[in-house]
Amino acid sequence: MPSAPSSPGGSLVAVGAGIKLGLHLTEETRAEIRRADDVFYLFGEVAPSAWIHRLNPAARSMIESYRVDRDQREIYEELVEAALAPVRIGRRVCMVTYGHPAVFDDACHEAVRRARAEGHRARVLPAVSAMDCLFADLEVDPGRSGLQLFEATDFLERRRAPDVSVPLILWQITVIGRTRTTDRIDRAGLEALAERLIERYGAEHEVVVYEASPFPIGGATILRVRLRDLAGADVPGLASLYVPAAAAFEPGSARVSGTRP
Amino acid sequence: MGDGYPRMIHEFLDAMVESEDIRMRFESSEDEARQAMTDFGLPAEKQEILVAASKADQSSIKALRDELKRETDTHIAMVIRMIAT
Image 1: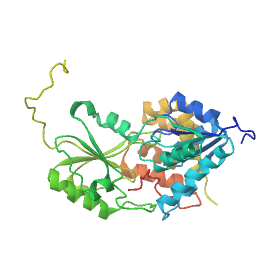
Image 2: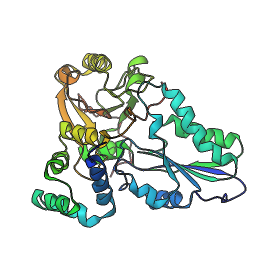
Image 3: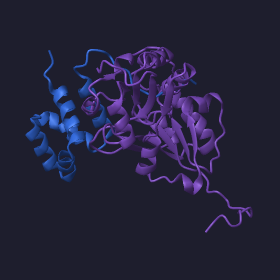
Image 4: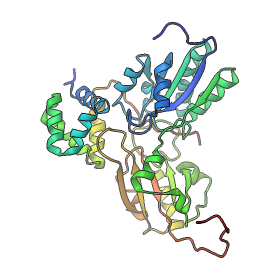
């Protein structure tokens, strides 16, 4: 670890490693990792990880925080404070998480908010998220028919009412209602989700269980199932659910003139 | 004391990230992928884990994850990017 801070005022930058670890980095992110005094990283997999140590030998994994059956908020606090401690003594810190740092990442948002509140420079850089991978792997273009996105617990608890003519993506379908870390998927939550979706889409509607590949080998896990079979499906731990539209949009007479080719 | 194979698989994945040549060999054909792993020193039974995972079959990806974690000391949870709902 370099002994001298890079500037009198500490700073924080939150970046994302993308999903395919080591291969989804932007040049901007690579540069931030390289020039940081301290790098804290959290990936969904233990490998590959050598690339980040090659970019910055001070890189330190936070994976040990993710032991089974810990309160999620306790972990976030640990991650936030680990990143902020060096910032407070004037160091340049880079916080690296997998995917996109601003998407489904309370720890990143809180670290940036707290750093700014304490008078430090803080920013977030864009990265490749699971959604970007899903667009590519399932060849979904949100420009064609729009898109609805919900976190699965939020979808259930707030009884969101999706528009069935617009594709829907639900995130974190394996840990519905959970506030503690786990190493297994929650079948009861998945069942509740399937029941709710069946009310809107019908039991025969085909959905796609999707998990992008974090490894440099192979592609995404793509499992097509009918909603009636979703609760019992072989769902991977980090899966999302893509629900295609159930009904085609009926164009009315309200076309906006001059906006289409 | 472990057998060290999880570490070797970890190192092979690291090498794939670093080397476009290894990635290309892995993607070109199954035989070439096996040869790349043999050159790296991975034994045949461990090569199967990577060959299977490369086909993106759900159980084989899980097998790869399990193998990578086999010699870790702590029981790591799924690192899901949860938000406090």
